[in-house]
Length: 248
Image (cartoon, rainbow, N blue to C red):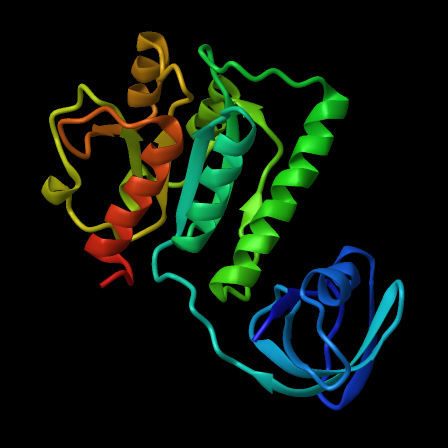
């Protein structure tokens, strides 16, 4: 059954009108008709069964039938701090990280990052990334939308970590690094949130690795092969969910 994100208050036994890109997706992309059933969610938890009552050129009307409290959120709270990559590579990372249960995403500008934004382009790119995340939630069955923050430099983000009052032993801070000697199997299962740092296409510089280590990030490696940036975060998230989360 198609799932559609609607950032509106949803109430059982009520009628709502859907406009914009969501209406276009229902009518022109999915080619649904009056009487077809869909699932709506607004990012506040749970989902709603609904029936299409009218499909117009720029608007779709639906009748909300009932609320379903179903959830599929991971028991792990994972923040992915991802070095920004180009175009579809970054989209792929965002999409798959949402499917794998990430809670928050922080796009990072690093020394070897090949993508540079001015303020206008950064705002448009953030809006695009939010769309990718919402689409991934619709596809994967998630009813909460992971947060994505505006792009920030790695050093500014690490400065915020230094200023944080959260004790380091309450959070697991991991940095994927090909030269690291320890693996996830050797770590103690976390009791708090996890921060996962992934470098860009050129990797993290020696200086960035050193500064990150000073901020409590542990270098880990997933195996003998060097992974591309769009693969690295996805592989690490899958391993985390397999060891300590809900992948079985």
